[in-house]
Image (cartoon, rainbow, N blue to C red; front, side, top):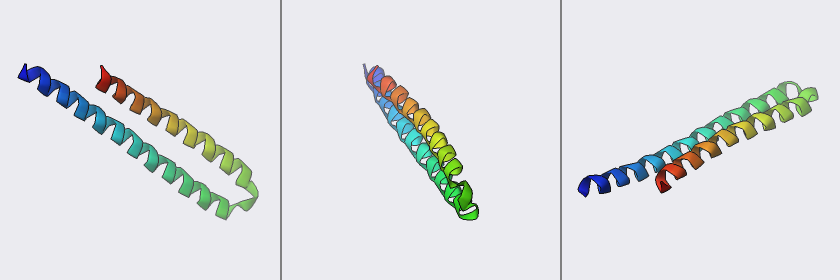
Length: 79
């Protein structure tokens, strides 16, 4: 009885930590992409359209991976 309660609590804590780490890593990655894009646009303003497009695609891919990680952690917590 106590073991199952402890196991459930640890599963919920692990899922919460996993979701938090996924969101934090995505935020750091997108922030780094944004800062690099701004620096690149400052160096080559004529290429700003291409740089911005590449930045948005990369940010969307990172956000998708982070969302997938959060969903997996929620599924673990609710199972």
